Image 1 (cartoon, rainbow, N blue to C red):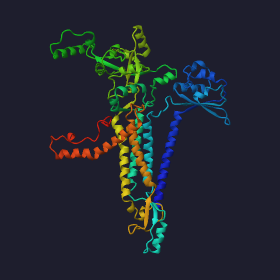
Image 2: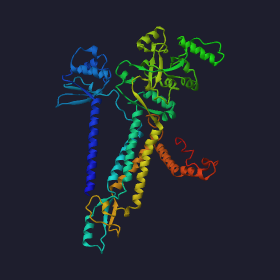
Image 3: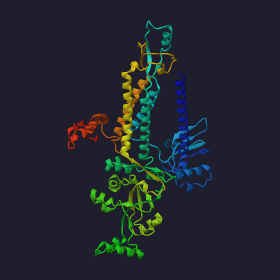
Image 4: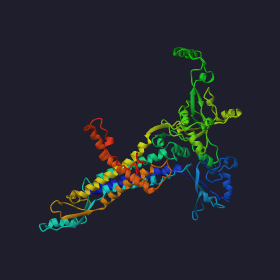
Length: 585
């Protein structure tokens, strides 16, 4: 009993220390997310204050604040800092301690005056938004609840004393020992181990789901409109694409065009690589009419040109345009083949962000630009560069744009991945997305299988499990032997019931994850909800039949049958092609 209490105390202290550490880290993190500006005076005219310091939407600080006021007060300088960081106003508190009022940003501007002191609360430029896919949110909830339930089931008692049978042959000492065990609860030693392993598996599954949310959510990875178009055009390829993680070595520029539009600012100019095609300048400007007699003559000529300093042997990078008029008249296959010749430029140039075009035009822009060696192209940019001949690419954006305007030529539009931005960050290839999705769905299924096996084992031997004092956890026990005549009759306790709930939550997490993966990106799942869950349940039944019947039979048939015997044709498929073939392959 003392050892059991000590284990629980150590576990509680360790859990409390972890919770306190997480709270401290969370508060430190929130201190950077939320910032306050205190104004120690009354604001007599709220509309005038808004017109001087805020944008029309009342969310972002106006970029023209420096020209509107000459005040040297500290809060004005703090507002300028909020404008440079593109902080978003969340709510406003005003009034003294006895009459303190708190209003959201949209409601605060409806007031005529604010009584001081006034505190403006600013948040991050782009707030965190949970997935719009409700099935994914339920999968998160079921995963965490299943982990908690399985962990509690591994620590709680699974049986309690229900009845005491008094035998004639019992001595007074034995009868006294049995009476002391009235209401005693316990758990056979192997029982609970499977639930503990299942709780750790569910915790790993939760971490995998959080990881997938981080590397795919638009809060951390910009370009929601472009990603929706990519999911529409390359649904299967986007599911099997490579995931890329960014290790930020320093604070980078915000690459979300929508934030700059809401803040009333011009789109930023950044140094970025662009899509180019490489050609030899001699082949572009002075094509040869006569072919050389052999390759040796060509090699000698290139060698002579390099010795004379003639730059005909190096390749000139020509900047391409996704908005080229010729591309709109090309077939999709021809456009894809032409875009596959595009490469990343060797050197970066200064470009400017822009809003993506309408959907039908955007679909033409992204054709052939989804590559495994890069993240999905989500940044829409414009560049005045035409080619990288000489050192012209090192010139500023405005100077290159002025040259282009003098020639009355439009700037070139492109959609580039985030790796093209010259920010000095480190990019890591994290593997295929579909493998991570399968892992996130396989772990809850395996946890459910462990809990199921443990509960079936307990139900088959529950009358013979608790037999000695080692299995009693909440009562003093000196000597107890329940193998002779079974003087104590046990009933199922809370641990067994919570284990069943943990297994059910793990199974529900499997179904929710399966249904959520059928959606395009982060959009809600289309179609009937009940039908999707029936398909998800049937999918898991098929997978269990494959694991325990189809795959072992195929493995054994390879050794027992002739080599020309086709196992696939002989084994009957377990799915109905008219009802369940869609979406299960």
